[in-house]
Image (cartoon, rainbow, N blue to C red):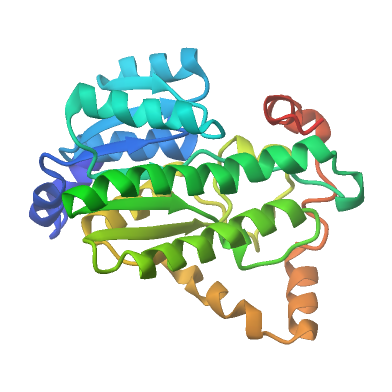
Length: 287
């Protein structure tokens, strides 16, 4: 069922359409996965959407398929990010919402991580988010309204073997976003965070999930992104039932170890199918 059909049947249909009408929304990492699905749902709900992605060919095709504008952007390059925002505004008007979705997820034993991959992960997943938030927020504060939505992960609350660098990056995004939101709370600009769990995209290719590890479809995560744009708030997990991860910091270590073993989270990011993950690994420089 399309989002349009779901909205028609939803009691919130009018609220969603009203909240998104005439809203200009720019999304990074939007050529595929969660980014593209989010763009699709927002577009179908009436928003003006612009796609951004480092893959010029992929973002051009994705934009053409959806019938919207799309531009190349390297989130690790401040000039490129600023140019992207300017192109968006020149094409469709001032940006109401920026969704910082671009990100990569390396996995594997920490002691074997390549220095270049560590830096690339933080450049994209953290510095890119900080850069985009600052560049967009400056424009929004000047107008007195706007929202930045940063896509983090429940991994930012769940330290897990094999995800050390990604854990650190997403934890940084969560805390950075809350701090900036507090600083800007009197400006009319909201900074929000969405924390998805495992999502069926290239990020989890080759990983051996099991019945105790919930895996969402991109459209499920996108629906939470849409919800936080419609009703701006500090953060939301996807699914919402995983909000308990915010209490992980106070869990006893014994409980954490037991839960990791039970769900096999102590091995899933260390023992994976390298062949199935090869394409994604090559794309992000993981191997």
